Length: 297
Image (tube, rainbow, N blue to C red; front, top):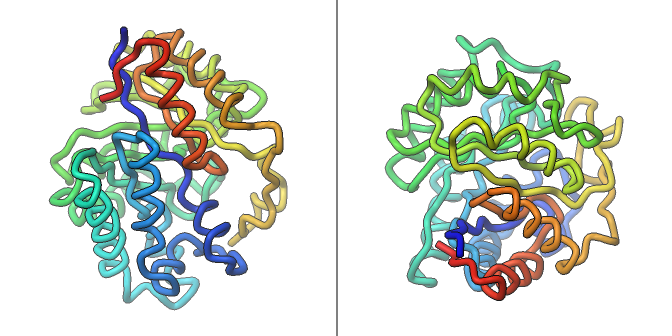
């Protein structure tokens, strides 16, 4: 029997599906203004499905993204709104941890837009100070390069909470970050206080190789994959929307659980889902983990 932390699944795609709104570059953030309570309901559904960690809907709340839409004046308020929605869901559920999400500056999957560590770290620290009083841990998500990861890790320390670092790997070669750097090079960041290492928002087929690289780094490790067919070229342009991404139809809850149980067999103790992996996937994964004798914590 292994103790497994079960993360929630994707938030942004669930919001697109439930709201019915045309997605914008700020879709997951804007929806908190247009549809109050929807984020809370999604958190509640993941808790009900068996997730023991809820990830705040703060991934894209960055000055650079808000300024493009004239919403930068709401930077602090949007973080507090996301925190309120997750806390309401946890209070209703009666248990669970909250992970404060720190997403990439500028854009996802764009190592070419990585900001120097000295510039990025203070930006992350500003968010970490807002989140720190209200979360159990900080989850850095979808880091696409070593430099991007380092800036986020340094800034995240301002929260005063454990920091989990999750990187995104090449969909065709899980041993490399999306920047092309060997994932093994992440070891040079381990002098920073990093409590866990994960891979996320890449296809599930790439995760086994990623985990094989993370395992020797002597930290709890795991994965939460996405359900996109691939990251299209159009999504890598400035200010994209999720219309540029295609979800795969073969990634059923059963098949996703097969992948995740294989990660657990590799030694992973933290699993969950990313974009296009919803409550049904997490519920089935919970059931499979319990059926195989694991304990979900």
